[in-house]
Length: 90
Image: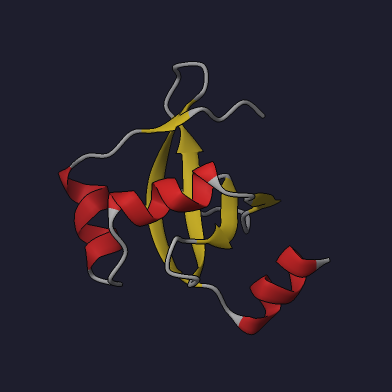
């Protein structure tokens, strides 16, 4: 999986903002040391990108491909659950 940048639009920025996550926070995760996990079946995103933002919060960002190599679109995100944090630390 090649992921070099994230693509934002009004819809996904709004969904993230509802959970106090900005595009900058999502980029913090991407540019840090994220780990990627398959998302649940029949969900809108293929993978969950999990990692810390610059402030130390552990975030889970659901992403899907855009059709452009290396460009993925965040679908939604949240503060990582305990189970997600455990999976990240393994």
